[in-house]
Length: 287
Image 1 (spheres, helix red, strand yellow):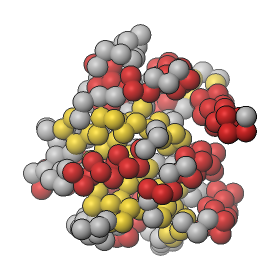
Image 2: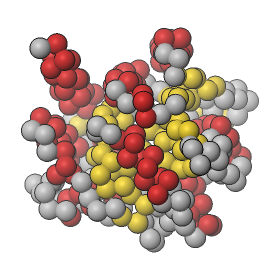
Image 3: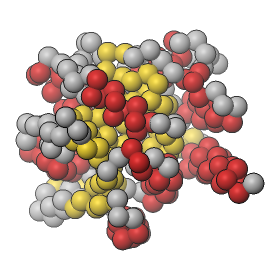
């Protein structure tokens, strides 16, 4: 059976999305469309994603705004909230399609990333989800550190979704510094891990995941949140765990818990950790 491949992204923040766009433009031959789920909070981000749709024929904006809904967890309007993301999954149930969900702050993907994710998903149909080897994710950071080649200067990282690394606004700087040096020196493979099964149905942050078009059991009606439902409830219900693809590496920029350290915002280093390498790529193409 021939499968389509669609990238989906809950959006969104322009400052991050522009980097994901640059990455995906290099791998357009590996997927059919990029669906940007309009879950923006700010008008400039809203305009940005619709401008992208006009500019690129492989980008489609999906809008599921329900103004009457309220996010009961934080007292905010439903639009722009985490729980509102659930509403978009009824667009991801075509059984001849591999879906790859990338957070809007996935700011770098390795060469061949989309092909690796797509093939791994198809080769592992008996898992509820497959997950990328995410740089900046507490569980994958634990596995990367355990591999013995990277993150050796950091304290032992918990094997836990919301563990000590996820909570730390300081450890993330060390990780970004180290990963930047790995890219600069052509040593991204140092971050590879063995394919890993979450056999105890552990919760994992879903920064980069994949599935074949599926029935998500009316996920749009649930208020537990997509991450908890997709990584805890659904795998247990199906008795089908989650599997991590060890050589599909991508960079997730930051969790909310990591964004502020004293008076310094992590975003102030975004160019150094991401844009600098994009500029270097452009210079290589020019000379």
